[in-house]
Figure 1 (cartoon, one colour):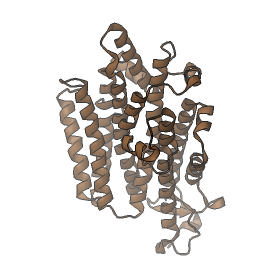
Figure 2 (figure 1 turned 90 degrees about the horizontal axis):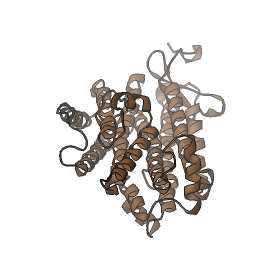
Figure 3 (figure 1 turned 180 degrees about the horizontal axis):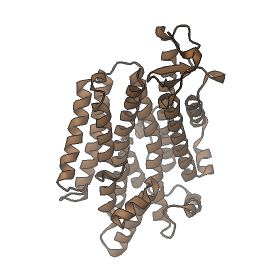
Figure 4 (figure 1 turned 45 degrees about the horizontal axis):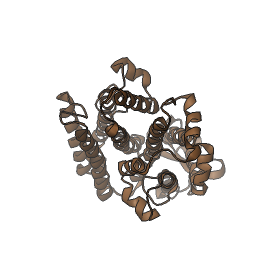
Length: 383
């Protein structure tokens, strides 16, 4: 497979998942602030929650230089329609659509149509100067963000039904599930910040002082009542799955356990990291046993590189594993054998931030290992 095609599929998977997860994170904040009321004190609390969201998702300097203040109007607009924000929903969908446009011959027409239709719908809404809240209030924002998730589900369903289970499929899966693991950790961290802020109004919403405030807030249990954690489950389409797995009332520690350590829930961090590991192993095995690669050294654990000629070129390394496979394998093992008590002993915020950093590192390894141009070695050159 050409490096351009492999990289495009990988990033289509990431961008579509990123758009969905940004919608979910923003919708969580809307749900959390919905019942705070309209008094000046309540509005100050709401703004504090939106400030926390911007601090967690990053790009604070870009946001404040453009909008000045974090409110329920400015933050959702920045995260949804601002084209200067490379991680906004409209930017992610546009990038996924552009990647698909350059390789339409490699994907089913239904995949292209789903992406193109939703992209054009977002552009029309943005052209009318709309905001996520719109003219009918916050309920309209909920329906809008749900439509983003439904688009992602539609695209994934079309992809599952039309795409051959070959190398390109596994690149797309690796991108999708790596993004999902990182964003599930981020969504859970966002909610945790909001609950700690509610438990201690004087606590910083982010930064160095937050970890200490969080440890004090959980001294008598995970902050937040069951209704707030139900909102977390619903925002991640996990409410029904929770009751099937736990068969009990909603308990905060059980919610955290399912979203981080469940091996069967498809949006949990552990499940997603496992899917990334499986996809990378299949990509490596695909090259190791490809008849066109007969005579090249290889085995199922072998990694791949993008050669300067533009094609994926397998290359074995010491121990049989490249950096991406090694990093994702270590993270998967930690999640597979981890316990919920160990997570809270380390600090939930600290644990989730570490997950996000390791997902970023895995992404860097994948980029360098599979897509970065390199010069072929003499033994890799064939007549």
